[in-house]
Length: 424
Image (cartoon, rainbow, N blue to C red; front, side, top):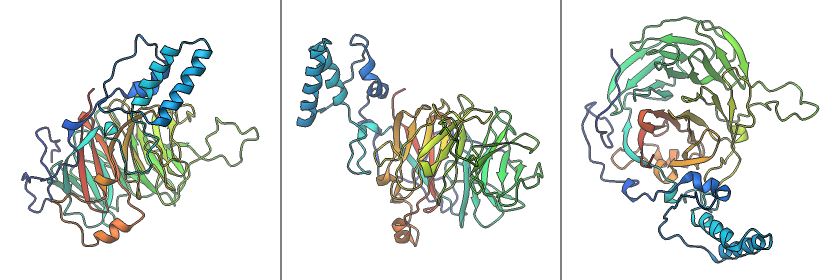
């Protein structure tokens, strides 16, 4: 069987009832890329350090200042002038800063300023063959892999939801990753079965038979680099690095048995997991390892050898737009081709966002208004009220070629494809 990615025009919403590649008019537009107000995101962060002459001009429609903002601007200007720095210069800089929509002043997590939304929904598909969804992954070209939670089965779909293959495995898969051309096992699948790993061809033939790495392992996320397999063990609260022979060569992020006496900030404090799992990804741009630490509301960064980089790690507990709230967020991450990080949040937040590798806010992909309900063209599940009332709504994300992002909802049993609308 030859796997392929879709390169032509995307189909709109479909529930794949016939299994055929049929375009179904959606009749809805969750977000129109034509109405996007573009602005320089880097300028939002760096405006206070730029010189006046080299600051880019950005036009924002309907930008207004509140009375409080004006008062603050006047105060800042007076202080600056008194310091000999120039009244005119500082009032000019402060005005431009305040004109941009601030993502950290929202009173409602559903209230996402349109200027920060950089993606639009292109299509949505339901996997009708999947009874109880399990693991999920996608290749860079858009082949989607979905496992059964209680069966030794892995399905491969096209972006249109067409079933390409059904793989029968020797155990129930808990995680899967596709080997890209620049990683180990190109064109093959590395599959986790709770506490052991195996490699399969895309037609379901087992290529390896490695023994369990420990008795009580629980691997739900995998990533590949040029010379290693990384497995996030949510039971052991550690990331495991394996070589191409399946040998465990290093434990990454293990919490120290004793707290350092001098409270050394360079000692990794460990992963905190409550009801969620640990997700990880290898940067497609730098090879650095990014790991979600949901209990600490952070994304931890490690070098390829497993050394923690505290100065490069980021995230904070906050209900604001680019913070992580709840008990356990972010729950899932992936890497775009240029190294930006995609994050997914569960529960009532249900937000998907992108960040620069250093943690600076990038774009909002989708929020609760888009992700809470299935599209109108896809029938709601029988237990939809129970689903929507649940406090646990895990979603998964996969970044594929063209800066496209797949958002998988195992509760609604659908995935949505989001296309970028921002200007490069």
